[in-house]
Image 1 (cartoon, rainbow, N blue to C red):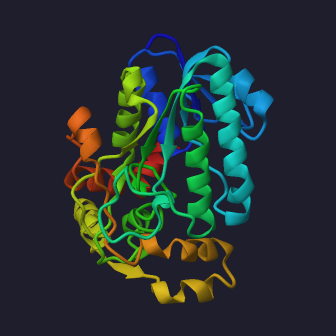
Image 2: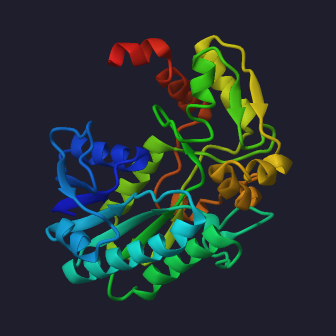
Length: 315
């Protein structure tokens, strides 16, 4: 579609999406509270607090499409109010301007499952964060008819320079520094990970899709499921390092959560860690594409991005 795309949020996925759009010559603008220090010169910027409905409307007033790649502090008490408010503001702003929305979502709203996660699974009311994501889903789905929304649901992601990830600074980053990788996710339970450049490609694919791709959910395709240990071994090999890995025992999460607010929040999401966690993206791959980046390529690229020599040369 011709026109400006506003990318709400400039975290790893928002950054990769804005870069992909700018690289092909599309008009793109980033909207968040503060201007990113590393914003590409060809990408515009609008100051916007997603919790302020008026600010959201102003940020997207000239946009034909909006990508929602925002992050909200990982705290269930914050999520309970902030996420529904943010989605309501986004839906109402898009209803006013007519912009289409691609919402980058997770899979929390499906709750504990014992099989690959599909788009047609029922929403859960389990826990605080999963129930909140279910509420957010109901908000945009209830607006179908007034707003065109496509949700791209992805599992945990990883990629070059993505520090806040199970496979980020504490994992590949540690290996690059000659240290032992520390994991919260169990190292030997198969777990899907989406590669951030692939996520940006999928978002752009949905932006380019006709209206019949909207009003529905699409699961993000991932490389064939592997264990975190196997993925880290691929990166360690590229670094010529020993694949040393240690993990936080899942049974200790509630105890550690007594002194660590973040680990307390992770403990609620234990069901994403204590069993094989895989995503069924058949719907997306049949409609669009299936040639995702294999771990044999993504893991070495991610590991090398944390190389101290590379980081020093970038300063």
